[in-house]
Image (tube, rainbow, N blue to C red):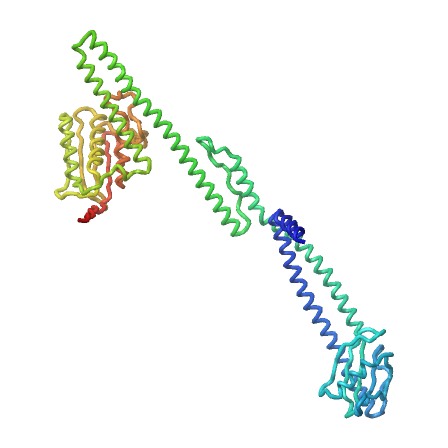
Length: 488
């Protein structure tokens, strides 16, 4: 038995959801039909028996009058009925006026005996041997006389049997139609789920290893009800998220490849220079000792340039590795004073560049890394000096507006073309591709500045047009952290 049940469970588990729901609906409907059929059949039997009982009561009223007036009872009131009058004044009921009784009349005698001690009329259903089922009713004609009437219930039984047959056929057809059409309706309602399953299989067969992998598949059109619509929306939202993640990953991989290629290209030049000057230094040491110092100076300059490039690459890598706070040592710093120091260093290194510094009389104190923010200002000022003709005016301004500290570095040079403004903060990107690296730099200055400003929670924006370039550093006015006192 257990094996059979286990096999049925496995078979049921392999059925489709629509079929299982249809079968479950059929079982539930069968239970409902059984309850409704039983209640209807019981009500119909009780109703027919009550009608028969009323007929017997009315017939007994007439028969009781006949007995009282004429001392006799009609031989037969209805076809198939039995009636008898018993004298119950003695110890044993005595039959006085039998009209017509079956061979075994013990049931009539027993009912008359009970009626002698009952205050109301008695009714009961009995099976008479050789006759069938009968409804018996006993009433008192006068003290000591009891009338017992029996009516066959075969018409009631036949009616109830036909009713049960009609109910069984009607319920069977209704159940069959419910299962068949319910299964079709459920299959149509669950079709969106099947479509989503096919979409998922299509995604599983899609190659996601490609760098430009995308998910063009989405769940089908609307329909299926609020629940299915909610599931479809969540499914498509998940696919959009996966698609966006794949796009971000592809962009990151492409950026990494470009970064590695650009870094290799940028590092190869100083390495080749170091190798060439090392060879020249070796030859000069043997053939021209007077040129050793010049070659050694160039060798040191290329090594220093390569060291600066590696430092910038390392800083960008640390900032990109979700360690934006790791390179920063935040402390209370006056932004105005920091800007003036950067301006002094700029004037000392480039005396031919006029620089104007604008700042309010009040200090602007922020929680920032003075060394890193000074690197940002130096990079912006150097960018203005490198990419503008000699004598171009450069301005540096510090202000507070809209709950943020602003540092603006502007120049009146040729400006940056609109097509290049969105990429000036990309690594190794140069507006003038023909510019030499000795003059134009490695292309990391603005990238480092932008990353350091973001690490401080701020933004670096580029505005301006022909004849003007303006970089704006926006830093939040966050409170200065209070140092935690150490225990004594």
